[in-house]
Amino acid sequence: MSQRIRAGIWGVGSAVPERVLTNHDLEKMVETSDEWISTRTGIKERRISEPGEKTSDYAAAAARRALERAGVHPEELDLIIVATLTPDMFCPPTACIVQHKIGAVRAGAFDLSAACSGFVYGLDVAARGIEAGAYRRVLVIGADLLSHVTDYTDRSTCVLFGDGAGACVLGPVEEGGVLSTYLGADGSGGPKLTVPAYRSNEAAVNGAASREGTFIRMDGNEVFKFAVRVMPEAALEAVRRAGVAVEDVRLFIPHQANIRIIDAAAKRLGISGDRVFSNVHKYGNTSAASIPIALDEAVEQGRISPGDLVVLVGFGGGLTWAASVLQWTGERVPRA
Ligand code: COA
Image (cartoon, rainbow, N blue to C red):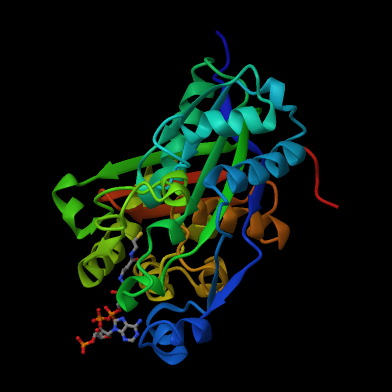
């Protein structure tokens, strides 16, 4: 009998803009305060891309780092998935632009739209494809420039969001890897978080679209309640499907939206703070990029070692949620 193929992460990378927008900068833009933002969200600063920069620029930079750490050449990739709600433009898909930028000439490429849950959705598709024997090397990217859809006159949203990208290369592994995934959606809650129309960066540069209707609008309280409920539920379901126990999980890497949401979810799961990863203070909410950026930093900081159980859990527009349990296999090319 042939042995089951398992999928795992071979390498991780991320890329964020250099420009920092602090809470104090925002105090000059809207009626807010560092104190309000810090206590309500845990965010101190976020990264903002330069005019003319595109989601694919950061996606490609994150991808190159992930490929290096995976020891994979771009031409070896079979598939590229870019999870984003801020594509460069409607067509071509950002994944195809990235494919060209990195020279992944053999790879199929498509965009995936599942808002902040998009990266874990992509991880599921990649892992299932590898397990089925359909693909051997898959690049999954979560990339968003939320500054393109943020209304910097609306204090209830503009303090929350930032820009960035994170990427993983997946391939077959002997043991461990992606133990489980769990995806969910509730379209009835869609109106709670919307971007009614999208003004692509290209259109913005050419002045081809008005800004009306192109911003994130959100019922913050409702999304907060949804997140606090769904994060622990999704994590528990992924843990159950993996056949492991919450106590055995080394690190929880939640979507970085708000430290109060992360703390409340951790409390409901009974997880101590030292087993929860957070960098929301540095980047704010970067949507599909937040989990892979956090994973990259967790690896960089030595927070996970081969054999450790890691839970990724996200939620967002849709409404959507997604969780995955990984048994960390280590990157193919160890970091210096
Ligand atoms: N600075 C100062 N005051 C602000 C403010 C800001 N940036 N934003 C809102 N306020 C005000 C409100 O106007 C309100 O004033 P009022 O009581 O006079 O009406 C007050 O602060 C409280 O607002 P409220 O919405 O109740 O605050 P909150 O504690 O719920 O925190 C969020 C607001 C947005 C931080 C919180 O609801 C949240 O994080 N929600 C989830 C958002 C999210 O994660 N979205 C992305 C999902 S992927």
